[in-house]
Length: 608
Figure (cartoon, rainbow, N blue to C red):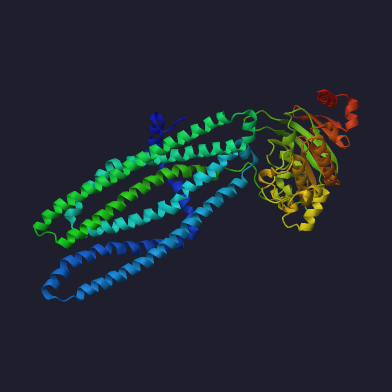
């Protein structure tokens, strides 16, 4: 899809011309608030800029004095005292300007980097607070691009926009003041050149900035596609779809390049318009200044100084207009971040939280109703209890909410109705830290960090010693295969643990769960993706981990839960049967049908 032409551009331009001023000021104030802790540095920066601007603006006055006073006097008297004094003043001023410039650069760098860092930290902290639903609704590539691109764009406000705007305003104001003091007539006659710039300049600035915004959006789309292509590399090769994916990638690149060219086209136009306007003003100064000079209404030194002030002031003034326009468009990108920061987490800490000093592990669901946003309820009046220290399993056909139950137990979501309790305390009254320390998850797909095996196991208890790490690995039946690796426990497993087999990854996950030592363990089909040999190894490790704890398992293979204390059969979002494996088979109900179907599938696989 191509952007940047026709109705779409007109719509965007109108929105830039007619912004919601109050909203934009609110967003602008929010972005500037990250500089508030460093207000002393900001004051120091403004003072340093004032000193540098004052020295720069004093130089044309010294030149004027040299031409109109010193040269005539020295021709008449031959005395060079005042000339030497002028050179001394100029040297001292340049030294002062050099020192102030160093201070300006240091304070600006400190201000911009700290404010930019705080913005990034704030975004990342808020991202961590958002509920599980946020990440399930949005692809990872989009979130990464959002943080990388949008945050980087808004950080330009601290690095360039705000400091340069202050500098430009201070410099332009002083310049225009000196111009008026030098010659009111010349100042008035060059005003039309600025108005000439203002006729076309802001519109070109907006168009360049709008295309700059579109360029950023197209860059996000391209980066997201790159992430998707890399993540799906194995799938693309397996299906021989590399050419198909390359076409989609090239389409994103072409769109990005088109936006890039259009943005620079208008950027060059705005630069040309700026130069044309103040060069026209320069011609007017030379013509009218010559008239004033020959009529003895303006001295030669004044004319030279005024010309220098004019070009300096016009350059800075037009840059300020450009800067303000770019900041206005930048606020549309900042608005996305602002709205993101206003997003309320689905799951919040209770205002007054309760703590469980000693977790027994009784888990109860009472008339729980839950459905994902925009979809019908998955659970409808679900009730069951897992007594402390018992092993319970959830079985049923796909779509009956088995994995959802585990998410609700850890408050990844909250139910719309009903309540969930741990040892009789509603889980939404427990602090999230207390609740999640009491629970341990082993998912079907284990996430391993791109670090060493030792660090991946220590993730379950960061303060654990090396001896405790080895003990956990032995308990998870992982020690033997770890020691066979080239670097043993220091072997780096690669991104998401790609260097290990599925069974090995699961045993690492079980080892770090052993380190965490939770009272309640929730297993989400932890062995369903493994072959028979790996499943047996992982099941052996699980038996060690699960001893003496409360267990709630989503079962894929019914054969793995034969010795469980209680099995809950789900259908239609409710528990329709419960009991031991043998009792449920004897009842010849829903569970019996599931077991019979599984047996038939296994027989067909053996024949196949």
